[in-house]
Image (tube, rainbow, N blue to C red; front, top):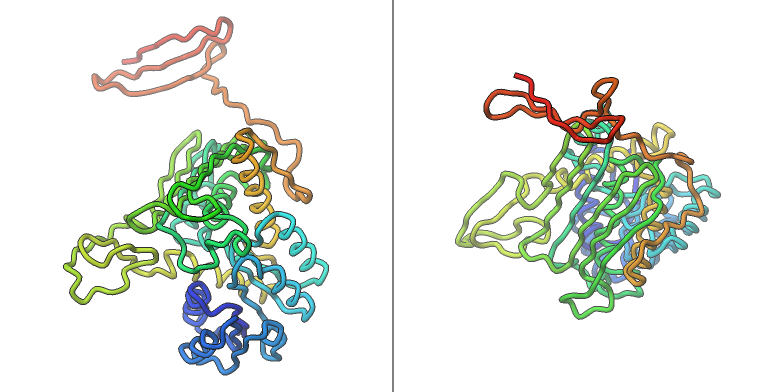
Length: 397
């Protein structure tokens, strides 16, 4: 059984607590910290938490607490993690790990120096669909991964601090791109180094200083490409989609907006439909088990099992640091409008990886370009002559 201090009593803190106290049926939030007293007391009442406080260190230092869950605005993550290091408490931190790579690096070095467990709460790599897709990729069903694309768009976040550059550290790319970057990394290989990025970002709709729309390409050392599309300007709800393409196959995933559950209602009796849903009338797309579909259940199970088994979680502070480094390069590229290198002061993956060979040998004299069955029953081959480079057709009946 894990006894937690929840830092943050807002939207994500409540989502986390619903999952923590429901999935393994043995973990409990025993202390709640919030910046406003009314938030802390309401949370304590709703979740039957005996201890509440507006003093962050008091919650972390509470004698019953053995794990601290950071569900706070981005600018408070480092402060919370350093207090966990001071009191030698295991810490799990929401995404993004930090506002930038420099903060993330300090947090990573602090938890490793303190010798405490540190898990990165990147829920979207724990969704049931992602887990199944990732297993297929690891088993070679798609062959060599060439391209991994992830999209997260919605009308904008739910709390005021997200819109403030100082507190958030960025706009939709930091808020949503952190998910997308890590999804692509998991398919391409987290031990494959990201080398450079090309990014476009702009403020198209919202009256903010940060970007509300961004698109980026992330080039990896083995020649694979990661791509993300993120927006706070998309109308119609929350759209979570991933695509993975390899030499032997393709995976398409729709995680949220169109999942096979569709409902029409005039609005009578309708209330909450799904996170970021914009309407409760007309054709709606409810989500059957929101906490499970967003990965929270599997994420916390992995975190707590990892603590009890004395191992690292699937997602660590190091992963959060790498994501922040990639996003720093994206922000720089959006300004310079050029490919920008990913600056990684700490790299623990493979080195000197070369682009995988792509030539498929057909016979001693030819490479295979394409093979297909025609509508008239013949098999057509497109071949390339090794000696001349000439492309030829061969039809086999």
